[in-house]
Length: 380
Image 1: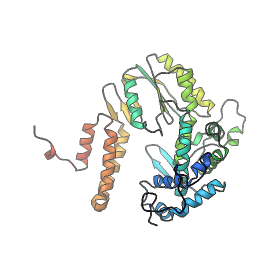
Image 2: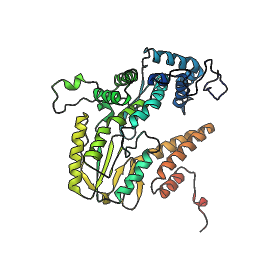
Image 3: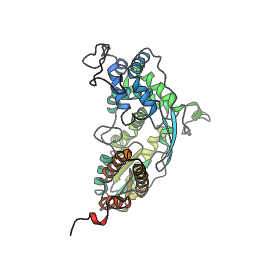
Image 4: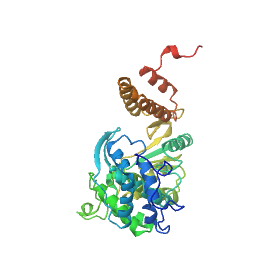
């Protein structure tokens, strides 16, 4: 079997595939659907996207039929156990330790999120933008621009050490409420427990705690897992509902652990900030210090600086992007087959910057890279 082959690629399954892609698995139980051969095969294709040149991924794809059948069997009989994750540190611009599950585990994560994602989605408000189809970073920026020009004041709240602070008991209670399937919740518990064993958890005291309470509770999710993104997004939904349903904040949006509120009344925003901070305490989370700011002074949000008359890319983001592009260009000049990798990064960077007022920035970047000269300017 060739690496990466699958249904539609000339490979014939030995079993009979049912109409719902479950290979004859019962359609009623959620774990049966998560662990179906069709679901796992499609999950492997998604997990490998953009990573096929990595040795661990290529090795798994070469024996993909065996891997999928093994995952199918061990998931259904409850024997599946997460593998040991890899760890690396990134500076983007904060120093973060990324804990990434092995490729076989990422196949399971993809399959799981495909089926529990819609169940978790039901509890999210429309103005939560992370990890949701049709929303994302740029939609959040566009909405922030609209409200920053409609209101006089803004309040930016963000959680201190969000992923390492997530409480397992609270999270698993949410998952149990949403999923209502003990076998799938047990699978989620295995993933949560496995990831937390390889991160530096943040343990804090909250009102009502005894001395050793923080050390008696499981805490923390790894940043690098797809499941962590979905779990973390759901974890803060009670805070969203506190803001929109109880406090009646109309101009509220959240991207993962970054919250942005707008109002024409400074005192009202300050009161909302206190109430949301208390809601975060109930989730065993703490916020960074915050203050209400006039929107005319500008708002820093998701790597952009939103000003009254324009939207700029944050300076530190520009510096990092230029260094990355210069490095990739040097590699491409030394090794021409890498040129496409550089061009893909350049197109991606410029597409991101295009959501701000960045024509001059993009022009300047091309000149600094030596890809544009004064001779390229149009006449007149």
